[in-house]
Length: 226
Ligand SMILES: *Cc1c(COP(=O)(O)O)cnc(C)c1O
Image 1 (cartoon, rainbow, N blue to C red):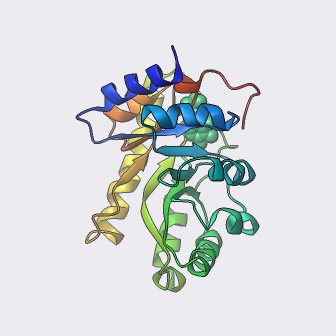
Image 2: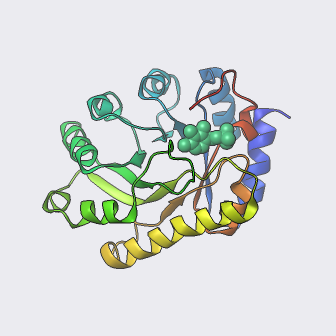
């Protein structure tokens, strides 16, 4: 199956749902991104700052770039001119740096709070108390150029369906709670980013609004990532 065929199959599967697809293009050359673009893909996900910044000029300007990997504060400046959503926000310090760089570029950058939902310790993300500490801080209230639009999580690498469902439900629970406590008047706070090639069907059933799909569209990546 070609990239276009794979992408169209996802489009059909998502039709009539509340869920959109982020095409995860890490490690793939821009020609393959353009193939996906020509098939209709507009949301692209990369996990590394340098790689995203290198590819961005070669794709049309209506691409929504989503950063899905860990972001160091000193690298925000490289993507601030164009990034649409940073899905991996895991500290107040990072939020403040995004605010600063977005202001410099006179734009708003959207963000998701990344939660730790997996059993593996190596996977990053916030706990609920850590997220609430950020949202209750004085500094958070001053932000004008970064807008939180939801939550993101990476589930455990397992084929245990019950465990995956538990983790997706945990993330959805965090979303509902934060929405009620901190974002109730804001319809923009609406995204639950969960589900990848191996587990996206379950994630959609559990309420995902953004699935992040790489290998099921582009094939296996040349080298193992993260
Ligand atoms: C690589 C990656 C994906 C996509 O993984 P696939 O299994 O290829 O679909 C999704 N989310 C994150 C955070 C990733 O790093």
